[in-house]
Image (cartoon, rainbow, N blue to C red):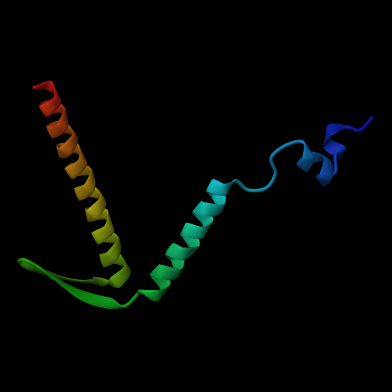
Length: 90
């Protein structure tokens, strides 16, 4: 009788899930793509907005823009859902 620690790879693979999860693979792909994006967009740029001017890296500007877009989306969805709920209650 074999001890559980003595199982070879084929026996352990047939007993269930093996290898990295799809979520881990997806995370690693996104992490690598993010690193490549940052390394390719390190130039400095000047941003003008209403009354102020900022010098920052291109990737930082894009990341801040994406974050602001997500925040605006969440705020709009919250407003829209509350408005819809109020109409249903009336």
